[in-house]
Amino acid sequence: MSVQEESIRLHGCGFNCAQSVLAALCSYTGMEEKTALAVSGGFGGGVRCGEICGAVSGAVMALGLVCPYTDGTDAEAKARIARLAKQMTGDFTQKFGCIRCQDLKKGGVVCNELIAWCAARGEEIIRENKE
Image 1: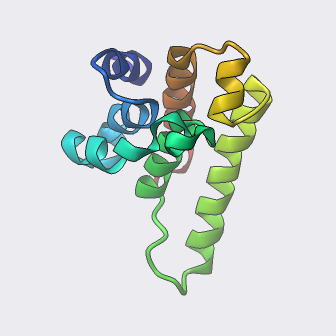
Image 2: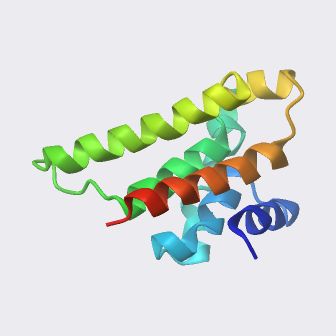
């Protein structure tokens, strides 16, 4: 099953957008699915306040796990994850016109489209940058 299909399957099981994307990318992050679902649980609905799309948040979390910045003195790792996060958010905004959950929903965008796109784009960025 592709990461797109898996992300949509998870969403259909009742998980939010962030959970669906992060858990679908577990084969890349090495995170257990239950942990991915737990850590991203509060990020759906734009962190439950209509802000940044949960699907984007889930993808950026996966990027951070694959390209970690865990040493405060590691300027290269810091710059790398910043670049990858900006790439993800920029590509998303270019594709969908905005990144705020509330605005996306007002515009009539279907969450499954966002989830599938973020899972696929996250996978592409991971493959291009995995250590």
